[in-house]
Length: 132
Length: 404
Image (tube, rainbow over all chains, first blue to last red; front, side, top):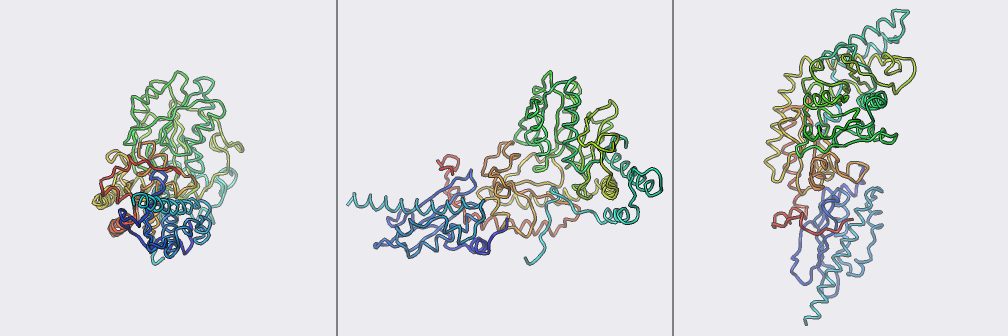
């Protein structure tokens, strides 16, 4: 499988590997994929009071493209609002990394991970509001 | 890349031994005659070389040279044996075929093709160690079973089937028995004088010979008949037409001669290296050997690194050349059907690596490989959410995953 230099760079030097405190009310977690399918992505975002993503971390079980896709989105997410994050499309990820057709699903998974993390933070915020 | 990768994929193919290459070359440039040319010395020289090679191939496997038919490789041998025998005996014996779910695609797809034209087939599941259960094999035989095809050595997990026992069951039930031995030559003693096998496939390039040449053993006593799949000049006693590739054949003969003379020494050497690799890799947590370790060729190690995905592992260890059971390395999205057939779950199938050691592997190669794997598996596990979950005591098989 011939990968683009960008995929190889993210794969060899993944950005923002790690976890955030999942119990922090400002942290949203998105876990998507399935071990049986060969990829699982866990994306965590920390959002400040103005709705801006301050920090993003990932852990990914998967092929080089899956690792690169998740590494890339953690870079993109920092500094964006959660609504901006929600609108990131898999095609942008695939284009940036020049993913081959058989690896497009990795970018889809990364988009799903963002959406799941955003949904999680929104649910947490809603729950906090209702509790208040 | 800073250095040439270390080649640990001898089950995919082997380099041509320099001794083999040297003996082949004159048959391209000097002794270029067609072995079928009976009217001049060019032909006679080529024919002599071909017959000498046939003797060498026969000697390695305890056969008579007249039982050896040249083909282009094991895929052709498998097709010729399975389609040739099934079609020849369909009207007298029946139209049911038995094979094993872990066979090479050249066998599985040849049987599938026969199903398409009206045969029926049983694809037996092996046990979790990769071996065929003899009682289950026996139970699969039907009154109309014409042919059984069982590989001697599995290409992915290296397990050795009990060919003698399976062959005896076939004999008792009047079933023709074909064995794909592509991965077995030079690794396992084969004595067709004693083995109850009717047809056996070989190729040169897994045994330090050239690609593009193979052979099919066709038993003479009792005589087995096959329908030709390639029609033409009636070469190879009508079983396989086509001008013989003298240089390739000479190469296969020499490769098999070397295998016969050196296999004992060589297998002891590769076994030692394989065991060293095995012990080194087993020091990594959560590793699983795929396939039986006892009934196994000495140079193969197939091992899964749990919670690490196979393709990313292959990328991480690009300094060594190996194969993976991961779907990501193939065009399909299914992980290795062999590992699935022995009951490995998808995760372990995805994270499997096949190491195959060979004639030119050194002690230093193995040591380097162990250290490389230790460091890269560790690095990828630090990246893996599944590893975290495992360390937190979460049973991943009980998690509800959204399939995609």
